[in-house]
Length: 443
Image 1: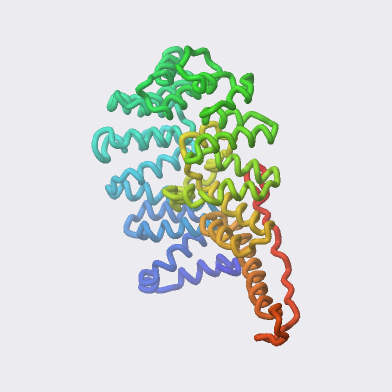
Image 2: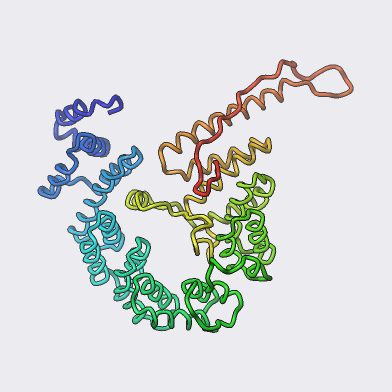
């Protein structure tokens, strides 16, 4: 396999006695599937599994093979294996929500929307308590941009909990995106935005959904701004005391970097304990080459940003690997609102950028842990290799600095030294990283 002689590898596995193949299945099954993917026979092998259920390896081995193929860059083959795993477990009456949701997402990615909807309806009907899985089923359709199909599940969700304003908001936004019942939907959103008993986060999202549409007064200057026409609303009208979400929205549309940084800085000044504005402000400071400012903005709260926001599971990475990044940066309208957590992609970007900044500031010992954090979070094989080289180069520099500290003379009144003084060792500078963030930030 390492020398790309797949046919010989396949023959070698086929020649093994059945006892050996059974006893060493943990190593051989993933290799066998990787060879099949390389030779274009993976579909036939999966078809054989379906025809002879007794030959199907354990789900853990199949998931291991999918992970290895994904890490090797063969995302399509990895997804095919996971698709079989989910379907096989459902056929074996392992009726858990993750199997239905995973298989439905793969169906959506392959364009089989009727098949995906059938799975989600079965999920709601047979798994868990009544109404328990309406929320995740609707959330999957919302995430993949199928608002029209999500309405069916959101409508049931609203009926199951008529007092939950968040469900009403999601249904109204889905209908608005699908172009259904525009007049009544806008009325629902207006009522949610002006409802004094609703949480302010709900009111903010409802007002944002009405942006550019006619509406009544919401009893809040900030909410009125959020529901206004972004293209004609001057940014200066958003820069008022405690207009947190309005400033973030205004910062998305301004082209003047100084004004953008001013808006975001005022967010932090007014609400020092809220962190939604820190990441876009950090990006702006990096773009403006204000390293000390960027460091001060995000370094003290970087651990807080990542707490409680784990990396996506291996299966989630494989299934959604072609559906785009989970990070829209400051340009993602409400992505930074109402959440202080960084997405997985943003965590990598911040960690790596902090490492680069600390190197520019001549603080390599502090930079190393951030590169190691980025390496731990990174899932792309090519980026991992770049980070491995970066970390190795940085460790070489730090090792030589430590050796030089032991070789240099100590300046004091006595001439005698407590060490042998030697010439200073020289280390080549670490190569600049080539990973580029989405906002044009060179990593």
